[in-house]
Image 1: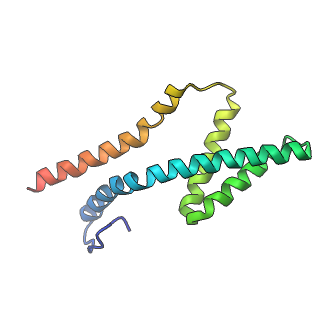
Image 2: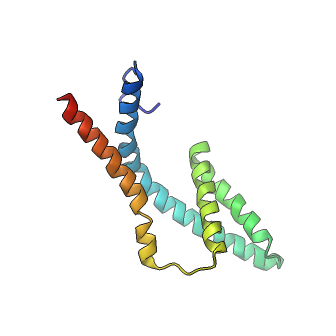
Image 3: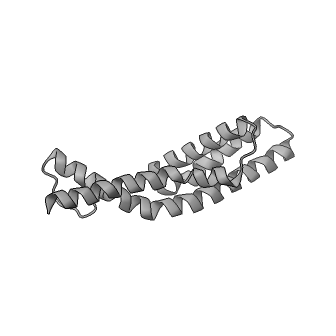
Length: 133
């Protein structure tokens, strides 16, 4: 339910407004947690899988172990965080497979997307309040 205020949703426009209102609120509180916990869990998953793969002397098991560990860390909030952890894992594997080095500026640029989504939804909420007043 996208309505953080638990009001009744009686129409599609009311539902869409509730969705646009709740999206920036959820992003403000969830993004720092997802970023901090996600990055730490991903680093820990990758390091643990590298350690076990080195002990077993099997490089192919590293990806499987990393995926399993990402999934285990992602079960903290059940399906919501599991989906985020699997997306984190797949993105990480795609970036690793490209075999390029990434600079810190590229990491900073990656924050533009969630910040842009937040700005767009805040703009929609602002415009809706202007139109209704």
